[in-house]
Image (cartoon, rainbow, N blue to C red; front, side):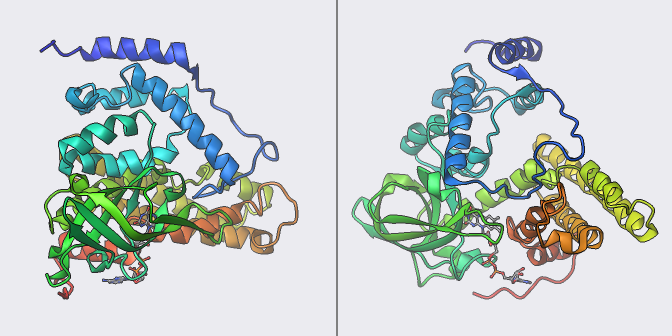
Length: 406
Ligand SMILES: Cc1cc2nc3c(=O)[nH]c(=O)nc-3n(C[C@H](O)[C@H](O)[C@H](O)COP(=O)(O)OP(=O)(O)OC[C@H]3O[C@@H](n4cnc5c(N)ncnc54)[C@H](O)[C@@H]3O)c2cc1C
């Protein structure tokens, strides 16, 4: 086996790759009233904009993968670089200094689905999909939630029935982010309806282009349609595409959910998509409210709590970086983040009043409505506020457990 490249040599190699293929990032300091005033939590895209964003992401993913920086920690036998996580962090820090296409369309596929495939799939599936996912050739989505199963995920009803070397999947999933441009999905199905609910589930990798899969976009109150209903009508899935053991799907789902909390806590959502507190301060000034004692109090609370949320998040990320599993810190980090977003919503309502709900054409005012309308989604995705409070109550504060049904 070849000796592992040193961090210093790796850093040199990565820098010369980035210098040859991307431009250094230029920090743009925005002047009030100039340029785009978009402030959103979940950016709204038309299908054309979404396609262009995906193509740009795929272009960069390919360039990066082919140069050896697309899957730094992945096993060499599967096309990865076989290096420790510290090399990935080093590379991420370097890439952050360059202007590269956002990897948003791969967030769920690479953040949650790929690590689950690596942990639980057959060799055939790992070889078939993992390299292509990290190279940006295919996109993955998460098919967990159903109309009657969200927080209570184990109550899901989509059935998979064995038929020789295949399984026949029938049912409905909902809120599937990115299903409209996904090639594969990680689906959890009920395979034993008579077993206790956590013990009758099995995970699979399903081909989103297979006959019987129908994706219907769901329009959000912000105007866009970034998630979908997905219907499965007798979709055939080979047994080789099973994740983990038959009826062992709960363990598979937990692997994905652990990675989901880590991705939300450590990813772009950690910044709250707020466009920065600076923008909020500028707004207060430009609306003539900088001298208002109550508004100043509200603003100070947001800045203090934003700082606390980001430190909690850093603490949780440091634990993961040191080899620990995402634990209750992730729940606390996500709760602090969404609580602060709510404070921002309240401040915006006080400062803007009717300008928040009616577009009078004034730059940087009505644009905040996108942000405010996106906050409820953040309070739900990746574990609702109430569920996270239950986790913290039980696992951190040691309160009695909620009664669990069958
Ligand atoms: C932006 C966004 C993206 C998403 N993307 C995906 C995706 O890609 N794939 C996917 O599978 N799903 C996705 N989801 C769905 C998400 O996982 C679910 O919405 C979430 O798990 C909540 O489930 P639910 O909507 O069924 O609400 P429910 O579970 O029905 O909850 C309804 C209300 O009851 C409360 N509640 C429920 N149980 C308890 C309890 N035990 N104690 C106290 N209160 C309780 C909840 O907090 C909530 O207020 C996404 C959601 C959002 C908002």
